[in-house]
Length: 276
Ligand SMILES: *[C@@H]1O[C@H](CO)[C@@H](O)[C@H](O)[C@H]1NC(C)=O
Image 1: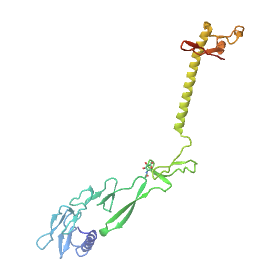
Image 2: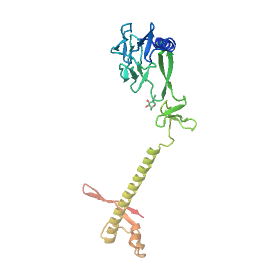
Image 3: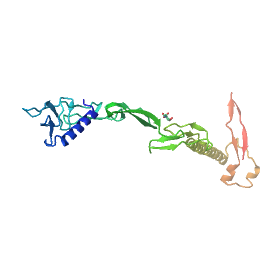
Image 4: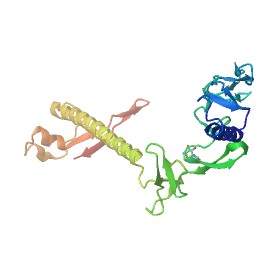
């Protein structure tokens, strides 16, 4: 491979030559020893320089080499080798390198690549180092994208300041990191609290209903007994009940609840209790 700088020098010399001494040669000719020699076209190289007897003899570039302009050199340039190709080398064009997604070029022609090891919330910092032949080597380092007090919000692609729980007077549950905001302890756990209230409410209603049904049942049962008057266990609370007749509702307010008679070994004891 002919180094780029040497090629440039050759082109310069050739330009001076053609514009000066070889002014009388054709556009695609070059004066050698006072003779106008044909240049080889792109994709070819000189096999025999022109002589007294014959014009320049050109041959195609060898595989893996190319020439992209008219020249009078005996060699073609080596093709660029790549890890990933954007464009393959042809006889007249050099190869172009590319990189896979998530990879970074390790030099200016991207002939080598390296994996981007930076994670979310980090940015790539590139440093360049010029090597020989004008090739620039790249070195990469991962740096935090945001300040220490910030986190990177990937959804909107910006840095946001982290919530400072101490400023709002709440204990900190999670300090946060490069990609996540800090989480403060909630004073009242919203969802848990709400469902607890709902549960309590439902429980209270159910309990009230049960009590109501039980009470109604007991009332109706006792009132039926009272109305029938057949129960021998019935003991009037007040003799004045008959003096001031009560409505069904009123009379049901004052009656006797009698427990079931407790019997054991054929001996029964009955308890009576007056309720108003
Ligand atoms: C940041 O915190 C989140 C949530 O706890 C976690 O999933 C993530 O891995 C953390 N990231 C870093 C870089 O520590």
